[in-house]
Amino acid sequence: MNKIALIVVAAVIVLPVLLLLVLSSQPTMVLDPSLKALGPATAVKLHVADSHGIRELTAFLEQNGQRIPLYEAKQPGRRVFFFTRHEKPADVGFTPDPKHTAEMKDGKGVLVVEAVSNDFRGANISVRRDVEVVTKAPVVGADAEQHYVNQGGAELVLLTVDGFATESGVKVGKYIFPSFPVPGGKQRVALFAFPWDLSPDTNAVVYAANPAGEATADFLLHVKPKKFRQRDIEITDAFLQHVVHDVDPDGSGDLLERFLKMNRDLRKSNGETLYNLRQQTADHFLWSEPFMHQPAKPESLFADLRTYIYQGKKVDEQVHLGYDLASSKHTPIHASNDGTVIYAQRLGIYGNCIVVDHGLGLQSIYGHLSRIDVKPGDAVKKAQKLGLSGETGLAGGDHLHFSMQVDGVQVDPKEWWDPHWLHDRIFSKLKPRDASAVPEKSAVPDKRPTVRHRPKKRA
Image (tube, rainbow, N blue to C red):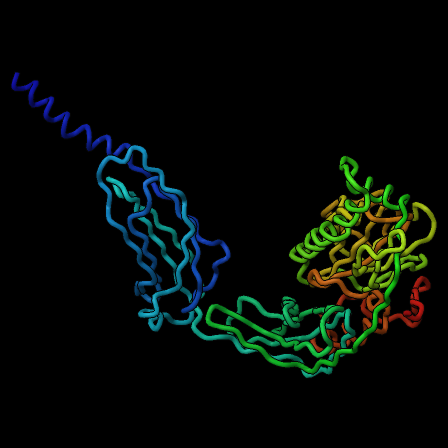
């Protein structure tokens, strides 16, 4: 009987402990994958999860045989039964403890973050990440060239960065344009746009940044102001019937209201889609010759301000960022230059749309197609057939909408059709410094392309 009693007592003592151990959980933790460098003001972000919560979270830097404390957070331990406790995953952020940042030295290091589960067992997890420790901001400078840029146009600048930098490039007002390494050299090259809607006196600088801070420098820049056309666009019921049903075939309701929503909200959403494609660019130019102009008559120019008139009344106003080029129905549409297809499908107001990346953030856009003959990932050559013109999207008739963007900012394509502009603004800045940065066939031809369009004088 005494043995039975002992077994019962042991069971009463041991079984709860075993149960607590069995019910204890294992924490998980994910450190921000973009974190490659660490400085005194770096925001470290991580995602932690444990059904019982986290009892202790600590971070430290291993460097030169030292463990430098960076962060610590604790809460009271829970070692009793919490069968129904379910803590939600949490996003945690911290910056290094200022009491210890003076101990950080420039160079290599290892960031270590540890978490302990808040239950009986107190299971722990440790995540390690090799980092570049940076305590000093970089130094940046630009080339000594005089840069001329048209309002709504593009330019190129070379910059030199001394010290470790996580990003660098050009800032034009609120817009940021990244730089890319020049092959075989210490300089970096940045292609940037001066947006059509910015004031000509908007400040532009080159910059470089790292976790310790940011440096900027002025460069010689002259902005040429431009006046853009204003046009009235008459909207008919037949036009509304066609475009609204093409973009939204399953919708219902007043055609004018549906069109206005597309022209405003969908246009903005499609613009964001195009802007985000800037991330899919090569780190060097993929082309070597001037861009080709589609052999078609222009019906709209870059940055036309369109006032939409319906039954004699103004109903909307939008800016058209591109060229509408019309010839005959279902005209073959060709790649304006060598590049890689990064988009080839329907895109709202643009209908069937293709986007080709040409490197360094430069991309060409082809809209309203009736047929697409390429797919994302295809390498295309200048003059290669991409598809056929059409009237998909918000197109009242068969034509091609052609536009170009630099790091997601729409620019006037006519500059890129001009071989002399390309020589003065692009190749002349690169070739004297590093021939490997220039495409092999960068020489300017003696004659301009036979299919080059000279826009009529703007109204």
